[in-house]
Length: 393
Ligand SMILES: [Zn+2]
Image (cartoon, rainbow, N blue to C red; front, side):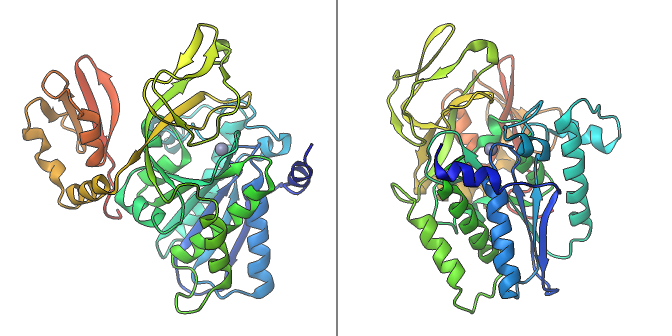
């Protein structure tokens, strides 16, 4: 076992949901850090406690408030991803409504964890007097350079672009029920941050750096003062970039079930380039090949999890600009006039596209405007636009 692993395991003992709460009573934004939503990822917990200690020792006069919330306490204690189910897949629209109406069934460990976390969250949001920001701190099973992942709204993008890190867009089209999607649905800006491999001590350093930089980028630190911690943190993260600050979009997900006996081919690292038809993994049905060229993303090298791997592709700056223009000008209002496109069930922000009429690049085109593919019904693709893409509720 590496030294880092021992340190990691001993220092993440956590028994309360609220890891810390820091304010000097000066008006300003609220920054909430979710730490350890996955129990085998204690790095965020350790990092948050370190940042909090420095803030307290130096009596930093921050604007607003910093709060750290532990995600899955039982799983953190057991040092495993989850006890019964993945806590980052249970924040679906349907379930959140059931919780609101008191009809939800509490069946397992994570159901209770979620209710407790939600209570703290609701408390924070009721006391709110300024804009809140959220960061969700994770680590990966394979070695990885750190990166940010966001649901693709312009508001999320704007914040994410201030960090010297690669950005991955569009995870929400493939993953239902992440906590970030829930926060975005409430209308708040939220970033996910993957700091590196679970047991690598550098992941803790990277998590500390993202918390300091988030305090800065959300407006909690004095902008007019030279801020050594901010400069240091920027340097720490900038050093991790392998090929410049690129933006990627998710193209493909390989879902797995335990009966599949999925096994990833050893040696892949996150963002490694792959060619179409390259052999990536195997399962009980045989060899699994890449459906398209791109980069491997989140290859699974641990026993728990439903995602074997993803494939991402770089998006050019040009398309990011076009997409921002289309969204700011609300071009989507005219989309239902196109052949094969119509409103779906008279819902706001939801369109049905007949793939007979609009078969080429449909998904890419709708992504540009901030839609995501919800489902396919017969020959129709249903797209939903994120409600708080360009402005707050
Ligand atoms: Zn995670």
